[in-house]
Image (cartoon, rainbow, N blue to C red; front, side, top):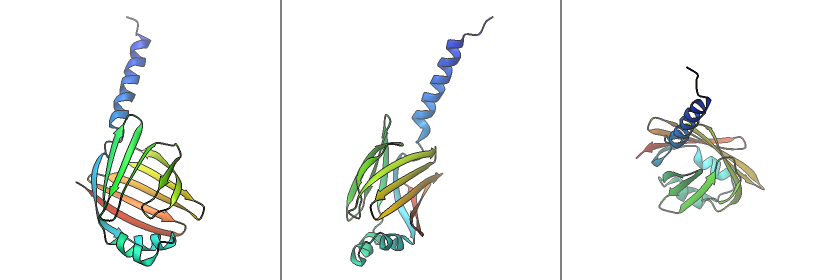
Length: 155
């Protein structure tokens, strides 16, 4: 009996579609900030004033990821502000940050459990690497030589 190449292609396409639909499932849902290490230093490096830094670092934001087709949405809610970004992986977009900067951003998918978010501003570049392991998401934020680690718990 001869194998049917179309069946093999169809199976491969189906496998890829199934992987794509579950690929980012590790991120999907809501996450609550549990701990933050050195975030004040990152905000200071970005030029955020001391009063705003104290307000920002005193909140425990909730981050919610949703996916519709090829677009992911990340909504961050805190007592101070709610920000929402919607993006396609690898495509640059305009973003207004929670600390009121206008940046050019790109989010890339490094793996099913790892996203890299780069924000380019005339004065600085901020890179946030988000990694999920089980019910914990770690966001490592780097600005120049300053690094912070924010740890979130799945809700």
